[in-house]
Image (cartoon, rainbow, N blue to C red; front, side, top):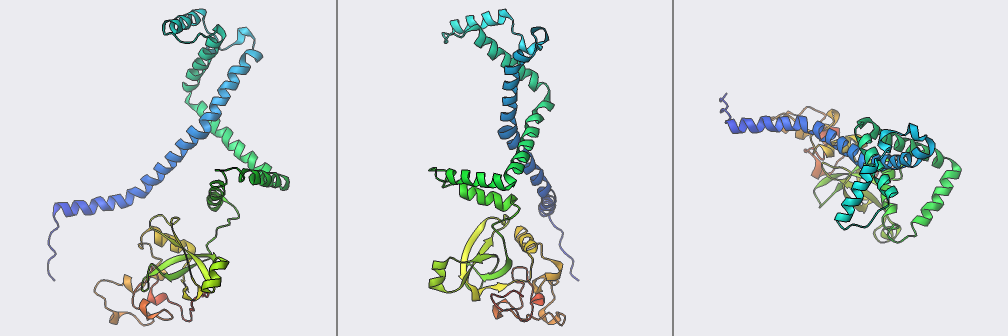
Length: 318
């Protein structure tokens, strides 16, 4: 055997760098996305709730507690009031009453007191969770659903809202809904983007009636893209040109996300045979059966010739 030439330092560095990147990047991206989501919820949901709680405390504190029981942040010395009045006069700012100055000073004092206790910021997050739970309870019963449906009908009549709300609702229901309206029925193969190139797709349902009147019976197929399978293209193809693929939805999505790397062990085809092993060495039983001639002797979209099922007909579930 001929001796393999030694790799250069740059080649070795590149190989190890890419290997480390492939190992660590999924974990880093996962934690980054979680941290970004937490920051969004904290700033856009929890912080407004915390601000409302602070305003409520400032409003009710003098009405509930005796003057002798007022906290330190509530007390505003007269010297500070006079100092603020003089500063506003010197800067030619609009005049403020002493009570307005005290209210603003109390809000600043209370905000500083609140920020010094980092654990208090989780109050808003806890309140948000409780509110979401209560909304689910109230809107989950029959009466709540009917009231919310009427509210939705009023909302979609508002210009601007009707162009956005229905589509946002579909995406949210697809991601979090218990009874998802958007469902993938099965994995299929279609010749896309041109004849001779076979692509994995997800059958979502039938086609639009007006289209079927012109083209005959058709199906709608979603073509996912790598590495984000929930973005892609929606195509309409004749039903008899679709071939069912012997893959589950999860297997197909993993295959797309990985760019074709994650192929189920039981679905490895001739494209995954060892280097140097020719077709003549393939074990019996690995012949392509039931697939078009253009798909034989190759691994098509993660479906090997050895896994083709006899009798698969276009447009029919195996």
